[in-house]
Every structure is written in structure tokens, then in C-alpha cells.
Image (cartoon, rainbow, N blue to C red; front, side):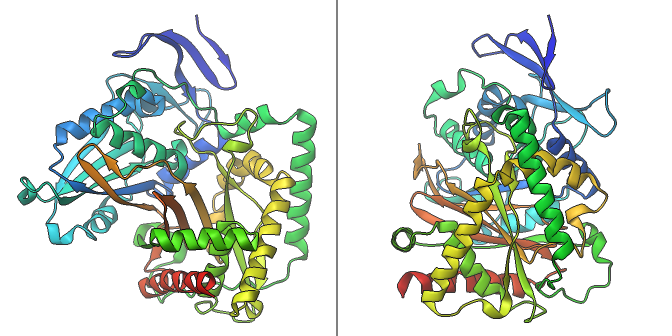
Length: 475
């Protein structure tokens, strides 16, 4: 018997190599998930999420990686499903479970001397792949030098690329951790049972708020956003565009994503966390102020205002809370933070004061329910032809902090050196800082479209962010 509830079709099925369980065969995608699929298909893979796992250890056989990916497919419904058109609604989709789905697993040879940057070249070649009907929505690359076959200490990389519609940085990181567990043949019981389908963001929000609270929360958010839009006459300062010979609204056809990143040592990471605790601010607030200081030297209007976008994870605010291991997109946002470029501080004491002001804005926005309000309407807002993707309708910069992630130092024979976050931002128009902490080390990466932005400017933004962050720690 099949029945439908909240856009899910449930049917009893038996899973190959797994405990028999009652689990849905299909899942209709929610509004935000559908919109992300349409954006990716229209704008050449825009917003795909990628993670580069830099490993050290013996040769990784392709068959071993394929077996580890198979373990992930047994555990996560999205990874063993095909994208299908939803016959009930135009431009909408569903995921249909199929145990014969084979996700792409590629081995790509590179030279050992190129291991630090080779992945960027490959990402540039493949980032614009679009989600295909009847196919899976994730793929895996294995990068290593065939001449390192007998070297048990050689550098090797695994790249995971996944559509944003079914993943975000937090959940994809958990899946990447599980992939390494499977590769290292650790905790095999983890893959004996399948997780249920994760609920769509709108459904999770609906379950967390009463109808009246949803109405009040959304109404306040819309009224406030409308008021800000009507009364805001501030000129937004933006990082300078380069002189290009193509229209910027076609950036997805001509640009590629570049990623600049840096990891603090364990000692510096601890010093930052300790200083944030003493100052009474979050790590996101401290990093954001360092970004403000860095971006102030690159903007086109010193008399304008910096506007800052903040991504927000909804999982722990749902009722009940959603675990991070459910592969899905559960990220919304809050109101933009605005600050005059001329008032961005350079003195350390004032930087920490601005961090507290920024933190108050975030706390007030969250307490007002803005992350749920924005989550309810994101799909409809982005569904507009241009929407927030417009050349003239974007903030100065933004941040997405994935927080502490569950990676280990060692997985069987392999050591995890670092994880580099990236994705397809070829038409984002807003440089985004991707932040996470792994094994006691904080990593900050800036991503943006080149040549719409200069590589030198993006690299300077990254380097100056680290410089100001270190200044905040030391002084």
C-alpha cells in the first residue's frame, strides 16, 4: 500500500544488504530543493557543493573507493536515487530510489608535484556539469600519481561534488567523514541500516511552528524586509569588477570559481577561540570583522556601506532537532548586516566592539525567527528569473560557517591532512567565506567568480582576512 504525506510517498521495500525496513521509495523535492535544481540546470551547475579531502598514505585503489561509495549509498536514500521529473508539476522533481544507481567514481592521474593545485584545474573543467534526469546527484574523484604506487606516505586527494539541492556543507562533511570511515574499514555497523529520507526544509519548519506562529514570524519578516527596502537609500559598496568583454549577467558562461584558503594552526585556533570567549563573541563574529577590514580596501566606494550576508543552519532549531548526518540542504539566512565602510575600525579594541555589535544583530535576527521565515520563502524568492542572482542585487560579501566537523586525524592507513571547501560560484556576484574547524584547526576559504572578480583581489581578500584575524588574536 502506498500513501502520501507532506510530499513523501511511502512504500515498504527490502534493501539489498541492509536490514529490511519501512522506507519511502520516492521523495518529492520541496520548494527550495526544486529551485536549486532549476538554478543548477539553468546556470551550468551553479551552487554545486564540493569538498576536497587531502590525504596522506598508501595507494587508494579505485575499487576500494567504489566500495566505500557503495556503503554511503546503502546509508543515504538521496545517494541511491535518480532525479526524475515530477509529472504532477512543471519544473519540479522527485528522487526515486533505485539500487542499480552507480554514482560516478573517477580516477584521475596527476603528478605528485601538482597535488596542491591540480584539483582546482579539474574543478574548473567539470564544475559546470548540470544535474541530469535519470542520474544521481553526486560524484567522486580520486586524484593521485600512479608513480606513487609503492609510496605509503604519498599525497592523495578525494573530491566529492554534490548538488546543493540535496546537500549543504555540514551534511556533506558528515558524509565525507563516513566515506573515509568506510575506506579505512572502520565502524562497519554504521552502514548496516539505511537512514530515512530527510524532510525538506519547509516541512521541517512547518513541523516546528504552529500555523499562527508561522503567520506571525513570516509577516514580521516580510514587513521588516519591505520597510528596509523602501527606506534604505544607502549605496552598497562592492568589490571592484574587472573589465570583461562579456555581459555580467552571463557570468556563468564565461567565469569559473577560484578558491583561496588558509588554515590556522591548532595553537592559533585555540588562541582565537579563547579570545572570542573572553570577549563574549562567537567565532563567526570575529571572522566577520576580519573580513570587513579586509574588504574595506577593495571596494569601489569608500563612502558606501558594506552589506553582509550570513548563512544559518536550521537543524538544531527544528523541533525535534535534525542530526547533521541526514544528507540534505537545511540552510537559510537572516537579515543583511550593514555598516559604513568609513566606520570599519582598524584599532583592535574597536574591532572586538564591532564584533559584539555584529553578534547582537545575529542574535536578534535569530530570536525573531528570521531563519525560519527566510526558509519558508527562499524557494519562491529565488524562483524569479534573476532574483538575488542579479548583478545589481547582491551584498558586498558573505559567510557560511559550517562549524566543528566530525573528521578524524586518521582513517585506517590514511591520515587526513585537511579538507578544502569549494563549489560552483561562477555566477554568485558575492565573494563568500566558507569556514569550518577540523581536528582543532580553523580553515577559512574565499570563493568567487573569475574573471568577473580579479584573482588578485580574491587572494588579497583571503590573505588580509587572515592578517586581521591574527591581529585580533595577538593584541
